Image (tube, rainbow, N blue to C red):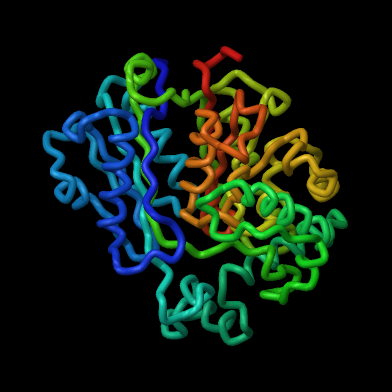
Length: 388
């Protein structure tokens, strides 16, 4: 397969950004990514767009950008797994010779100045029907409630503790301190985590990600072309997807395993590597629990040992497996799977400044969609595939 690389990264303002539509933010991100790569917009012959909660942007973004004669135009949505899926589709298309430069973009504006961040992801009571209505009547009506159930299942099976979840929150915030774009940069302690209010037990406030507005785009092209462009290429080594189809029934593995157990081995097989060769992780951290269970499913530790691994300090600055080095979704910004992907590009280029980790030879990027329903994995690095 022909080598491909990420050649451009574009990011808008992130966080409490009001007064701009998702389509406008997406257009801004694509223009910034093309400029970052040193490519005229007219050189793009592919565009993949991912809509957020608003349902925008869609394929009409091509018209907004003035793109013509495209060879690829797709709207894609695997929820939080979409970023990895977009890059994989772009890389496959380029490797097949069906396009030469593809922009992948996500933008959303769930935050509103007149309501709380938590309200952004709550469904209106009128949307509950049938048995879902019974769940809602019992108070089980949010994504956080579903993830709390998954986290509790892991705790019951393996003895995982709230303090181990807290260790992830603390290490992630420590990384955020070096990221000028992070929404939350003040250090926190394990005690701060334990004393933060409950959202849904066993998840505290500091176990839960931010809600952010903004847009992020990347440009994917052939590796040979990328080497002649403005910024250092970030080579795509491998990718995979996993959609486990968990059922909430007796003896289900819901909460115990994720799609990382499917997508991870697929990506590593394509790249020809093992977990021991991966030097950095950018993991989808909608909740601290998600990081912990993903580490297990990727093979960085044994099943049930994610808690002690996180508590060991391995994930934070100076640790053996730098993870979510920009502050992740817990402390930096929440742009679905574009959060971990953008930080991987920054680290591979060694643009991390104060937060630059010393070991960015091979970076694993994860995406998680729904309630552990969808998963994507990318492996990227600053050198061509197979070279260290």
